[in-house]
Image (cartoon, rainbow, N blue to C red; front, side, top):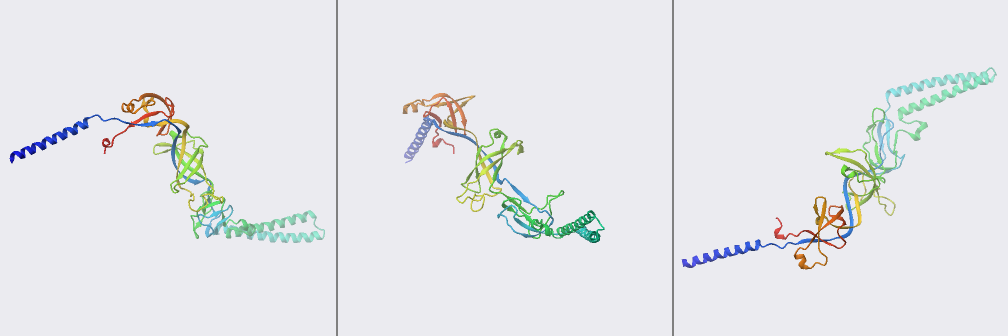
Length: 387
């Protein structure tokens, strides 16, 4: 029994040895090398860059009051359309005590002067009626009376402006009515009823009542690296995509390249601006007028710019190119090659002249013809791929 057990163990050991030897022998055999093949064909090559920026209106203004006071009424809300000259808010004037006192004093003085002028004129008119005063003297006294009346009216108007911010003579152009200076969309109203506001002067910028912009005239503003700015020119078309508006793209035309760089994260960047072309609907409205898919000020956007292009040229995948110093080569498959030639890897190393590359395909200027097949990267079997 023990003898049979030893024989079985010996047989198993021999079997394992044989299987191991067969496996190692099989693995040591040279694998058949195969390569991808690419055909030279005519296509377009474009080298592009992506610029990150944002969408903003070309003309955005801050509407400020002409007088200081308190907001008494707001007639508009953010998002509403407004026309130039349309009233956005009303301001209640809080008079300055110094100015009020001066205006009241001016009214009293004008009243005194007017009474004196009326008395003088009445006396001169009586004398003129008796032919005791010349016409010239009478006309001078009449002129003084008119000046005194005008000064009294001006003093009354000035007092009303100080007290109320408006007078009877300029009620239609009241500075208490805050009007939009342009036609557009109200982007923001940062004040509320009851807020104090001050007018713009030498010492401060004044309180912003509303921000208004023409949303039918939008621009893309972004920055491009100094290594690429030299390849741009005014009028270059761009394709704008906005992350918030999926599956939508807009055309734009480059209209400004900054002459001065700004440093950002250690790199020199140049500001660019492009006019966004807004598509119009059947009713003539644009995407900036409201509704779904509305373009809004401040949207982040990406601009694709074509730096260089070659149309209708011979191309192959760049992975088929072998670079050696300043020279470039491909492995050309002989014409009418059969299966045996492919197994023997009968490729001809051929020098080619390359042109523009987009990172995937490359332009062939000479050395190949349309329809030629070239060798690509080696095909790696699944068991050879690293895990």
